[in-house]
Amino acid sequence: MAGTSPRRASRMSIATRLLSPLGRCRHDPGRLTPSDQGLGMRTELTGRAASPGTAFGPAFVVPTRAAREAPDTGSDPDRERERVTSALPRVAADLEGLADTVGADTGVAHCEIFRAHAEFARDPELLRHLDDAIAEGASAEQAVRAAFGTYRELLERSPSENLAARAADLHDVAEQALDALAGGVEPRVPTAACVVVADELTPSQTVRTPREHVRAIACAQGSPVSHAAILARSLGIPAVVGVTGLLDAVAPGEEVSVDGTTGRVTVAPDPATRAQII
Image 1: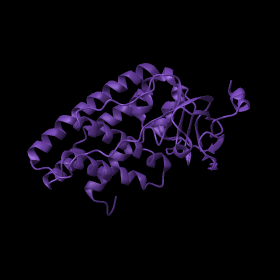
Image 2: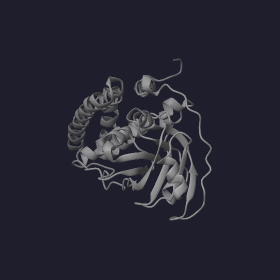
Image 3: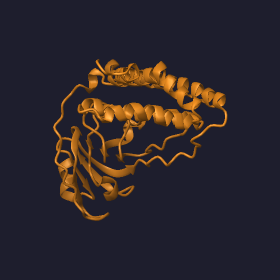
Image 4: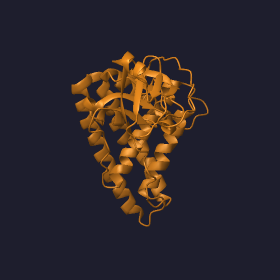
């Protein structure tokens, strides 16, 4: 490509690999019409239909990740490199294991999502970005944020929704790398039937949440062509994404109904709404 630097071309190549055949689909956006009613009152919200079906149940609100307490700079570059080169292979191995599990549960095609994630965690160009950042004095955590952020911004600027939606995949791998650097973080998952409510679910969060407890998914952000949405469809979980005002309208444990066919989310649904779902 004329005028494109080798490094930018490499970043584009890595980003394009995340646009798997599973993501090459079209989806019409829903109309955003959030209500301004308060908590505990029946509230109608509309987002984008992402996976068909209807369900209702108490909300399990996925906590937003707290800001990680880690220094931006590292005092010993060799130590920071060692931390990165130890963490990323563990992430890649975990993702390969997740791919095997997903393949057994939903088919070979969907496991390729996580094989692509594992491949990115091992990518030599990513490792060069991390090494450059550490050489300039960054901590391992800051190097991960900077390197992954470069790729994510590239995807988010894409005019293609399919490609822009892959930014969530990079965020997913980055968060797992940061978890590995922190020594491992056990995610909170529901232990009873619920509607999962989140800012945005990553692909790994979608498949690691116990399927038997998930009646439906509602997200404030996300795209119907994201890999998380594709996985929800393959698992038969009704889902709506892009629901403006969702997190302000829903309290943990509050009943929520989700219509993944129309893109409608109802907080504190009345008996008539529940009856339609039953």
